[in-house]
Image 1: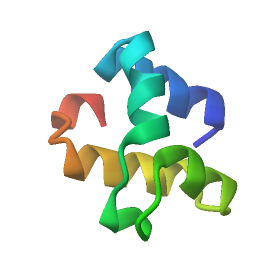
Image 2 (image 1 turned 45 degrees about the vertical axis):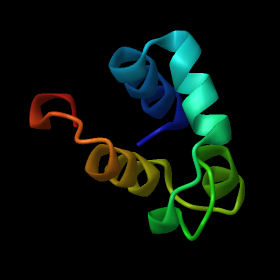
Image 3 (image 1 turned 30 degrees about the vertical axis):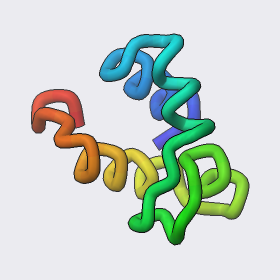
Length: 64
């Protein structure tokens, strides 16, 4: 998954403003105690991060 697709899906699910805030502030143990931004910067693949976000935030299957 490309980062552009990842951010598009984040914006579609959370809304553009909240997606950025969530990615910056929400620490998830499933990402090793990192935020979305930190996980991406640490080398996690966008697809893996999206899967974690979907699982943690109960994103409906049709949006995954």
